[in-house]
Image 1 (tube, rainbow, N blue to C red):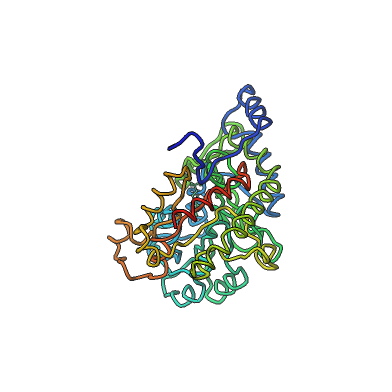
Image 2 (cartoon, helix red, strand yellow):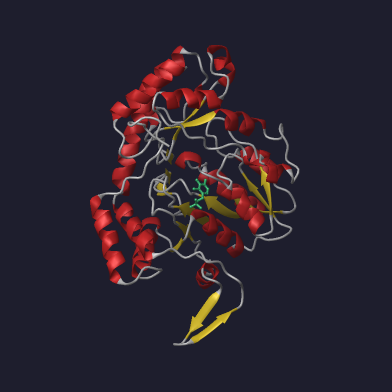
Length: 389
Ligand SMILES: *Cc1c(COP(=O)(O)O)cnc(C)c1O
């Protein structure tokens, strides 16, 4: 992907030598699949969230298992956001249910909770919110809506490891919370995920759905009642996760200071050009430690005012990305609106259905933000932005 030798990607995992050595020990141990390291990682995660947590092969199958544990299936409707990784909607189809997309809030870029409540219909069984870039929704309001209408909640918290709402960690309250440890996430195991279970969840069923539905008893007995997936995490990945979890506070601190640096440099630029406030992420630097919301800065995203830029040689997000790439800067796109993919258009969705999501989905860009970056790299990105815009 490198266009120049010192190309700055939008994301890059940081794996230290201690982690590499610990993984070497697992490789030499004679046990590679789910074993003692997964058990240790699950114990650490359960302590971190204050709730029983199970590991999975990725953040997609965690959501699929959560939907099955919640009893969601054919005939049921699940409300979700179109500004997400397509996995969020695909898992709803995977269990035979129907995703119904709700427009987003232009400030938070997360699902609009007022529109969410208005969209609840007779077949609605679950809410599937996404915490884009690690920013949680208003949890009090989300769970009040779920309680009022008797709905299950599956939180797609794939990007929100370590984020907090009113001081409590995302995943530590409410119904199901699903996390991803994919390579670009703040805490990675290469590929992996975990599901934080509500108190009343059937943990045995969760473990069976994770591995072919197999139920063991005694030394040699085995039975299968329900088909399960091949969704188990392996010990190599779990060891990476154990090392990463121990560093999570440091990782978040580094990301927070890089986000702060972006704000300090971008706020004057945005003001001088007369862009509206929605161009920047929701929390200005003076409220980074906002009382209710603490994001983990999984991404730092701008919404480009493409209409204003049209006369200045930037006629699309792609031309902006090309100009940044020519300056050695990688830009990510998270995400095009899911409801306009062919699969979902074939289910009846069309342009104009969700105008805010469509506008944001056309114009949103993710700037480089990863642990090994320095504030000099932030300066380099902002200088390139000034030139290009
Ligand atoms: C990463 C991600 C997923 C999927 O996680 P995988 O581990 O890649 O399966 C789902 N939803 C969102 C919002 C994500 O960012």
